[in-house]
Length: 341
Image 1 (spheres, rainbow, N blue to C red):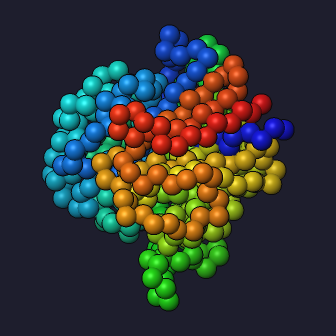
Image 2: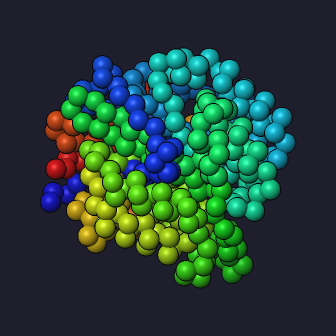
């Protein structure tokens, strides 16, 4: 098989929580995804007009929609409302469906996981913000993982949104170097938890979509920086690779956030017919502008350390995927193009 772009899709959640949407007149040969993470409503966001002008078929939140770090639900509600009241975001929502996940700062606890005592209440606030109906099955599910199917005249896209917070077990502090964390002992701990893993395996195995996009709030491939990532649970990375190789869905790619930088990582997965890509886009209102480098053995191209968002342009006819990192004024800061069959 040609060097196919590893396309993103973590086909999450139980079948009852999978949403299907027929966009008969919205797209034909192409489907455009815009996504981003790390957003403070209290800071200027110069990108909403550029995001809207990219004419995406969907907008995906990659986490850290707000910076709350609180177990006070009134505070969470007020901060979500402040984001919803931003004119540029309201304009985007008026014409574009919005999906996504949370990360630690909107979850409510910095670097938090399963131990957060207010996670159920916080989940309801997140679902309110996302416009999920009060009687939706998602209101009874533990965790915000979910899958969305978009079907057009020439093809389909499945977006699998993961929850890397609700079930994630303890990290291992690194007391020997200046890094914040180090990998757990192999086999200890989990990122997704048993129920979400079973759901994800089902979503990937049964997917007939032309592109499968997996959304993880934290990076999956880059694993040497010492911050939060799937690499802190190396056995979970191996499990994901095994699931992908066994299910072998079409065009899988991972979208991630969290890091306040944007970059693309790539690796080969034995048994998978194309390279697996992890496209990180972060942040929307504040970036790591003092970035001077960090190791990432999987990096393709350069790091963008200014405010940006990401786009994926999927072409069903030519089987081409174009990934772009875009800054203020619509300036393309980085690009990767991949054709696959």
